[in-house]
Image (cartoon, rainbow, N blue to C red; front, side, top):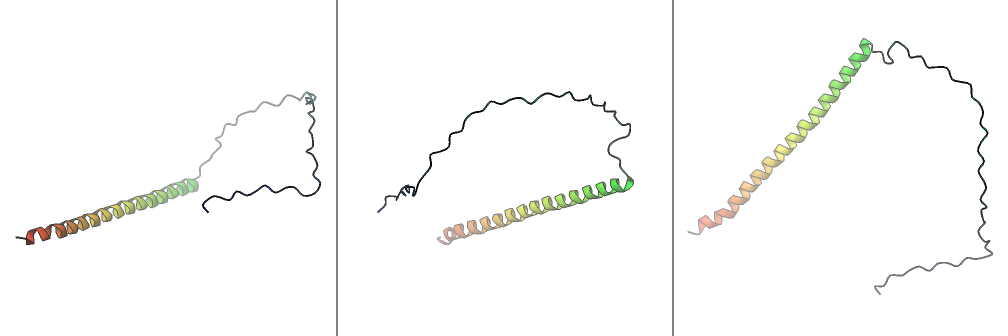
Length: 107
């Protein structure tokens, strides 16, 4: 009853062909051709990235927006942690007072 049932391997039906044998072949290197020498790369004097006043303003604005969003998220997480800690502390005080109050009434 508690033994697992192991499936049996089905037997092949019909004519089966033996697996094909792969014959190894020799790898021949490609013939070498003489390539013409490439021209030397001349570095340009101007920088690759050019900042315009509009792009600088956009980058500063995007950075400010990201900083404000990340700051808001972090402050809200800190506030949620503080509220949770305060509510746990209040619950602990209430439970402690409920547990100690019957001892005071037994006088």
